[in-house]
Every structure is written in structure tokens, then in C-alpha cells.
Amino acid sequence: MTFSNTLVSVAVGSVAIVLLLGLMNMLRGGSANTSQKLMRLRVVLQFVAIILIVIVLWWRNG
Image (tube, rainbow, N blue to C red; front, side, top):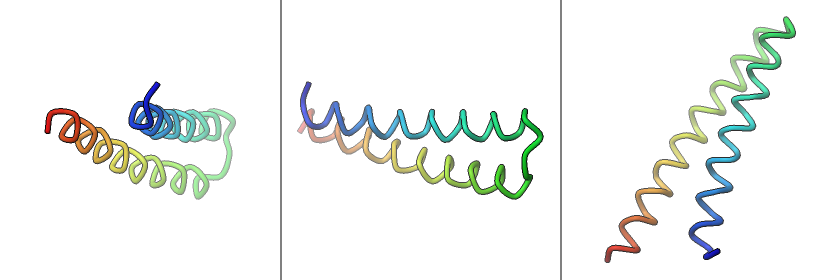
């Protein structure tokens, strides 16, 4: 596995983990404030993951 593959995998995995943590908190009846923070973190991580994927695709085709 190349460095770029690993980097993208970590970014996507981070999004999945935060998503699952947010869902678990919501289903458990946890704090709404915690759910909001986790979902905001998920949005930021998704943005980072998309940017990384675009950069990796651009770098491989360049």
C-alpha cells in the first residue's frame, strides 16, 4: 500500500468512526450537545477526506 492509499484510508476511516460514535450517542439517548459536536467533527473530517482524495487523484494523474 502506498502512502497516499494509507492517508485516504485513514481519512475515510476517521469519518466512519466519528459517524458511528455520533449514532451510538444518539441511540443511547446521550447528550444532544455531544451529538452536535460529533456531527460537526464529522462534517470537517468529510471535507478533509474529500480534499485528500481530490489531491491524490490529481497527483496520480499528473
